[in-house]
Amino acid sequence: MFVIGPSPYISSLCYSVLKIEPYDFCSLNCAYCYANWYSRKTRRVIGEFEKIAKKLTKRGLKTIPFRLSTLTEPFQPIERERRLSLKILKIAYKYSIPLIINTKSTTVIEDPWKSEILKLHDKSLVILQITLITHREELAKKLESRAPPPWERLEICEYFSSQGVPVIVRLQPLIPGLFTEKEEIEEYFSLLRMVGVKQVIIEALRCRREDLKALSRLVQSPVYENGKFWISYSPRKPEIDVVKPTREWVYKKLKELKKAAVKAGIGFATCKEGLFNLHTVPNCCGIHYLEDYRLRPTLYEFWKYGGLNSGKGLNFLENEKYIYGEMLNKYPRKIRKGLKTHEKILLEILSEPEILTKIILK
Image 1 (cartoon, rainbow, N blue to C red):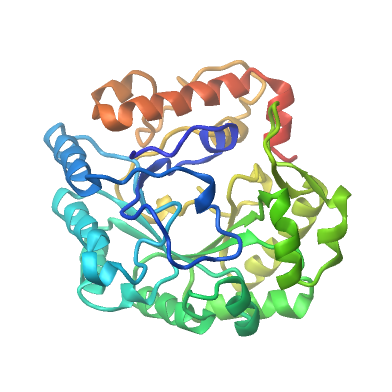
Image 2: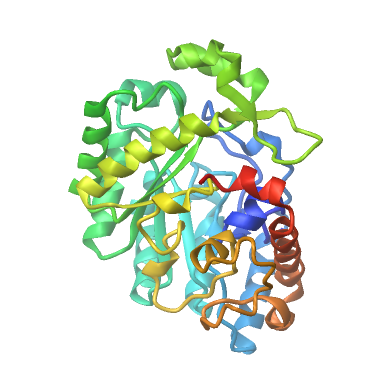
């Protein structure tokens, strides 16, 4: 319930694998939504989260930030009535649990939600991530018909960055057919700079092959008719029916976007792309903007310290901010088991060169 499901990409590349999903549905209905691929169980999530928070505090344990949330909008319209995310914010503040908030909603700029986020910021416990896949109003309306328009999301960025809250924009997914012109790219990053965004995180689109036709009706691009442009998302067999753009296209496009981000003075990172050589920030999620946090090891650490093909375990990590191995035994069971599973898969991938080369782009 509180740990993202393991997979070759998540287990080897993601720092923020702890999650809180207050809702098991999403009313935004975005064209690229991944939520309907997964089953979600969110019963008793508030009470169970508080139990975990209490145990962490009682044991004096620092934790990886929890992500609010991963598959659904935590501040969708029903939040005004049920206030589940508000309760999570209050629990996080009470027990000093760091949060990464993922949202498109303007609810966060209204009280009481705004006040709770600012209180978390006063204790350096929050990162605000705003999804913005395009700044073009008409296109956004087609792709995210029930979400706030881009200009309103930029206002959220501007307000919270003016209060000192670390604000990150997720260009996620990067949809082929968008950002094809240099002027469009530069305008996007210029807007982010103007509203105080610290960092951008980019992940290329992944979708079921059957959904390509629907996307092609919304985004006019010949790539949706080009079967060679799309490859299997899965690095292992049996391959699932989910595709992504070719590695060559991803690298070329993200390299172009990085150049624009650097020019605008904005930190750059990719999500689940294995493009470590393009990153200009210490970690992809922006956790380094917090003061006191913990990380789980990923392939980035092995890449950074030259250990990808060394057969090393994790003991070379002397930085106190990492938790792994026997350290995990101290953590509450509801998150310990999942963290250990992710670590096991990470170490397995390190011993499988064929899989490793599919996950890390060099």
